[in-house]
Length: 399
Image (cartoon, rainbow, N blue to C red; front, side, top):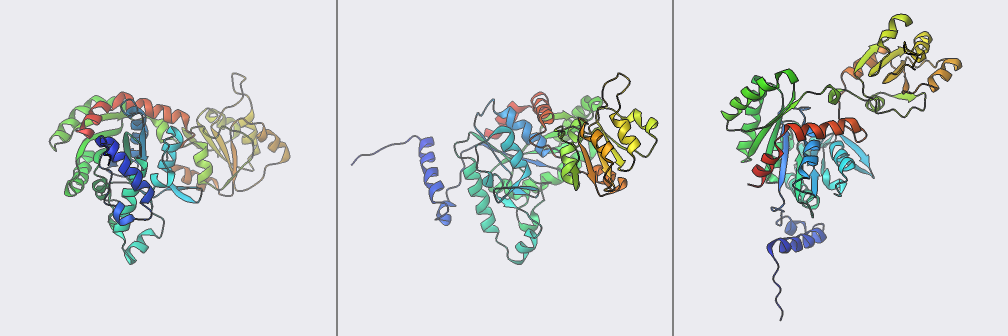
């Protein structure tokens, strides 16, 4: 009889091969073989839109210096895109498209909280199955990876209604946590204290805090006093990311998806960033001062004078350059004006909504980074690299 001895890491890889092949058939057995080896980090926040996705996106790039093969998972997701009959969280989709992570997409987004999810759970709780789904999804995402970034959903308590709060998920995954919060001193630290209590109740370690969207002129002041406030709570300040207006600005692609519109020309500048929204309710000469890069013009479709003015050359004799234009009230312009629109370099949309409805929708948009937002993604990478102590994060994660 021959005996073969495997090194510990090779032994674990062999076990995981068996786990991967048998998990669908022998779930009770395989659930005992959780991956406790691959380093992982859970990115949480004190509230929605504080910057979890921005932080995760930047960290994935920065961590590649230490771990060439990185995986990503968003265990509980609420906003989805449909990919091959699977509901994939939009952040998981983003990370995969940007970095080509070579992880199975369904496993990167294991629990989809659809509109009726909570009601079904409360009628018939199945927490053990949900926990097993998260564990198995993580195992497959972590397959042959050196590190896994896990992104939470909202604040620490989100998901409590179906017994999978962010704190609970971090515990299930045996992951240490980074808390992301908006820049400031008083309110952010108050909110951190609430979230810290939930994570500590579940026995989850917070390795530090990242302040996001800090006004540039206040960075030194906020860094000094936020660090002091966090140290009083036993927390480390891992980074201070300055506010960048671009990251909070929508693109024409986001507008197109948020409104029911028809594109009237063939412009491919769908990723134009909108810095300024103008409801054109003035004369054409007065409107000219708003015809500049970054502007979105919302124009009643029967104001052909404004549409023509937006196509006329500017003072330097160059074509007018906007981010885009939305024509309202579902009124199709004349054939002459349509010819002008087709020649515009920026996107022109037509919608049935009126100008007020369009402006309100644009104002209330939740701006999310998308795979095609190359300028935003490059900026995010640079911000995290320059303003977050990634080396300290690595040390605290593997310690």
